[in-house]
Length: 452
Ligand code: PHE
Image (cartoon, rainbow, N blue to C red; front, side):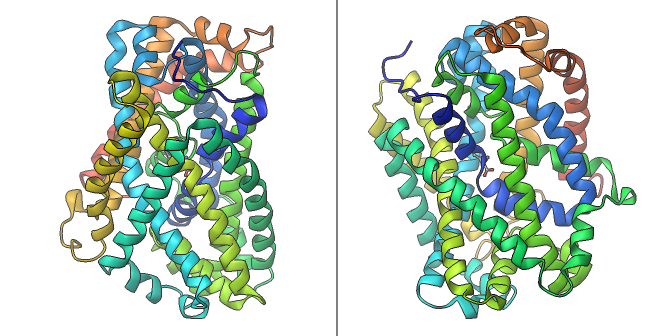
């Protein structure tokens, strides 16, 4: 439809690129600290149930919409129904909010690569003070943030196939192997078994609606849903790719990596700091606990280096997909070419990213809605805008376009759509009702009207 649009080379290329977008800091950095905060096993259980229902329904919808229309999000929603073109703009705002703070955390990852390269691994293994000092300084985190953002821009300028596919194909499997290895090692540390129980066994007394809200926001974030990204990726997908299989593979991979990341971090945190440490876990968790684990490990400084390099690539594939979405929209909407679009996005991201970076230091006293800037942006995108996008998408598909159009797109190669009945009920009834409830609670919680 659009001559500038590149395309993936086939099913594997598509799945890996979509998984490359999905698997990133959401799985490695965000999932573990939420799981720690929200009661371990119960959070995991809620998350898995949501992934199999909401996650499946939304991902199928978005990829199918993209492939059916061949357009990225603003054009795609408009093509389905003129009155819904506003949805594309709302969805598009999500990557614009996420990419800047994502790059701040990507910058932290780069910093840790440098830490291990320069032999400071032992100093970083102090369980938090080292990271705290870094995070609250000014120039260093800013510099690493800019570096990460610039690297992302370079890959995006190079184009979809060359950039995204090549990087994801090699790095993802290696990352999984390393995470499994680290998890196995962690379970040999004395005291981690109790932590493993906390992580795996649901304690229903810890369940509340906020668990569901947190798990839902994590689901959107982790699977790159409700922000037009999967629509864009769907538009790059060839017609003969099986969407049912692709969605299953992406979901299994994404959830698997998140569960493993938690396994690598939470039992260790429990062993080092007890239950206290778990409930007070925050955005720095990955950078505090893992270096401490590596510090105890034989050869830990090499493992630390390799680990952060792989996390870097996982983060990069995600930030690429965030930037790609914003850039491809700009290109579709304006006369700007790829390079100019990237430049514009780069500058906007710097402006929005600086507060997130400084919010742990010199701007630490500015607390929108009582949150530091990074948490604030994270909250606005994941807990407010994404549920809204998901809700309107369900209404659009369930009540205006009709689920049939999506189901037909899914089974256009004569493929059997096994969970079709579940899909239809989810999109038409269940998801809209639950999303309204979740949205209301998230907002009340964010405004401090109800407590976690
Ligand atoms: N899903 C990615 C992750 O888990 C992050 C991401 C969010 C990527 C939003 C694209 C869009 O890290």
